[in-house]
Length: 331
Image 1 (cartoon, rainbow, N blue to C red):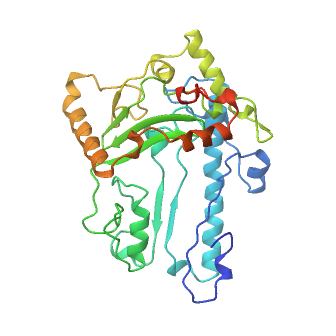
Image 2 (cartoon, one colour; image 1 turned 120 degrees about the vertical axis):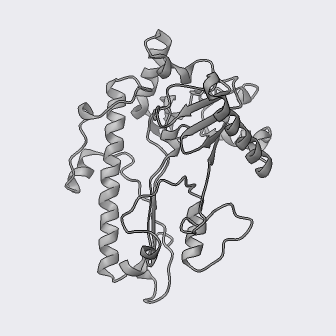
Image 3 (cartoon, helix red, strand yellow; image 1 turned 90 degrees about the vertical axis):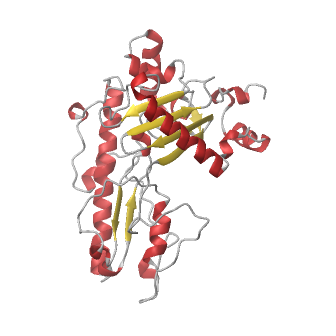
């Protein structure tokens, strides 16, 4: 469905549809009101310890909650339409989201808050395998949506694909790998190994802090639009410069460790780096070995320098004063 609707497909013909809702990415009170929804009160949200408790952060968290309300409403409308058209019992649905919210360590970063997304699957016949309404705690990669979709259609997964069928009896992932290289106008190389309890992050470019001057901090004109909605990013940076942040809040702006290790069970917000703690060297070594194997198996392209064409594409897209990385200094 390329911008169309399943009702455009002849009756009885199989179809594939992909809906990309904004989720109210920039939700406003009028949008919520039109849906009969009540906006989240910033005064009532919980600010996690990795962020300072300031109005801008509270608003960002509240707006993120609002996007969930809007998405829930939109999904409900789609389900109602499927049922009205007699397709509910014969349609497989995968629901997952974009990565993270508009917070400094979330979207575009390899912390759990930027990697962990919801995944809901509803498919005809699955009640024979999975109890309806049940919740699994498996480690899952979003690439598995492809293999699962093929399996539901009766198609074998090609051997060259790393995706796995979520409903296969032998489904299992001990770890999930993630990566971050280029985020808009910044260049980096971060690799993540997420296990059920421990999360390992390898920072290859320790010559720059985690929080480079990304597009959210560049308050200025781009495409005729002013990016003032991210002013709280600048506020947090100024708090760092004044020394008013806690060590965990300041970490993304200061010297960068080559390795990070977090105990997700006891530290879900990932504020205590255990990489140098002698008590966790076994877990660290296991994660290091898993990443080394992944890099070798995949030929990790992030280990090679950026091509001139790639650098030029960034330079031509963004204003010169947005390009703070060392790769751009000689241009």
